[in-house]
Image 1 (cartoon, rainbow, N blue to C red):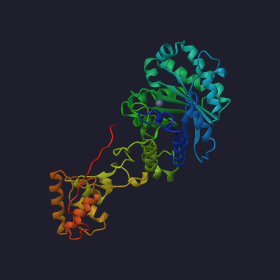
Image 2 (spheres, rainbow, N blue to C red):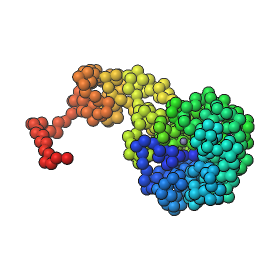
Image 3 (cartoon, rainbow, N blue to C red):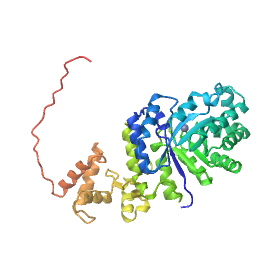
Image 4 (cartoon, protein in one colour):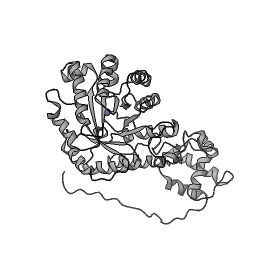
Length: 411
Ligand SMILES: [Zn+2]
């Protein structure tokens, strides 16, 4: 393990901006506890200046005993029309009483001109004033450089100046944000290389997934020297979401030899992922890398016979490392190995020489051809095997049934 990478989770702030997701204060507190158990370094709890729910969260979260993570409040640089100490957003951030405060500021001159309507120099002042002020109230102050990559492409010198203003004001980490998610890994590499040559302060990465490369962008930045990665569990977030921390954490620890969460916590990754899905009231994404149900599910007969000999033939990591498990699916694409494996899972003795094996495979393929689907029906397949092996006991005789549907009122 050569470097420790800080994991900054923003499931409760950026993740809560996902379409269809709404976390209550209670939900947020439960997720906070779960993230702390996972061993992330920072948990961004919300934006105290933006809604009363987040204000309440920050009041409640102080009572939690967290063993690992530090909670961060999120907000923006102060408004140009207020003095920094009179700005209501700044006050809300300080009143949240968190050990960490993260503020975002503009680094794209187009935004400075069209969104803020101020001069480039004034924006630099907003950044440094805000950070200097907050440094008096929090252990750590992070600066999220909003739209940094787009800003850099439009005006590299100004974008870097904004980072330097944050660094000089004492920001503990300067986070490069791909806010619109349009940047590709080779661009991230070129831009991060330049930033690292200009800055002494630790650099972080906050990538959105609009080009489906948020994880790749995050890993590219870390590989070059970024010390902090921001993202969300399951990649929740506005539009197409944020960098998926499940994939980032697994890749860092298993593939890149970099430390982030404690070793013994890695195997709780799948559990954490499912926990957040549950609280978000969503279906767990089966094809989610590392932690999804299908991530280590094998269907093709050739694959199944190969993994029976050596799992490395068709698996990039050991699924147990992240708390997942190998699964074998049974369908008309299955071969004898799938059936043998399924039979063993059901506690039946069946091997390659068993005379019933051919009959089972044949009837499976015939029934699937007729429209049956055994992939998601393990119990039905067990009955099919038992029938072929003469082990099936019939508990009921179907005489018939009647279905009655009734509706008594309009509406
Ligand atoms: Zn974001």
